[in-house]
Length: 85
Image 1 (cartoon, rainbow, N blue to C red):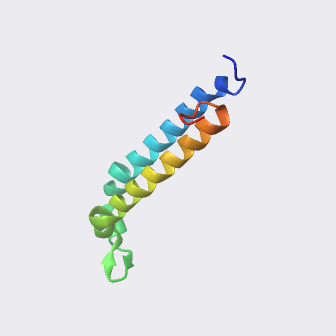
Image 2 (tube, rainbow, N blue to C red):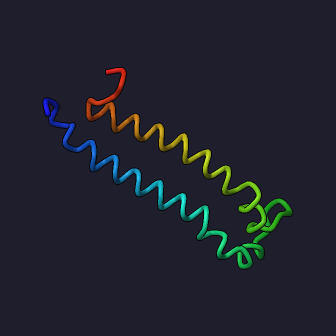
Image 3 (spheres, rainbow, N blue to C red):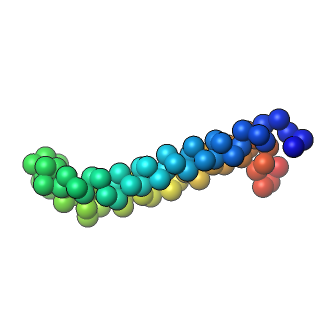
């Protein structure tokens, strides 16, 4: 490895991947396990459990997608392995 930062690239990428996987599992499964409890919370006239099933989780996935791409690009650039470097 010619760049000293390349050694940290893979551990940082793996940490990011596990973080994203945890968030994905949270919004995919965990939050829906408590839908009955969440329905007691009403936001803009909609029960929170219903909102999370209908739109909230999907919005979270889109935000996670852009956040992941940005974070991975930042890691790549800091470690000197970005494609356009």
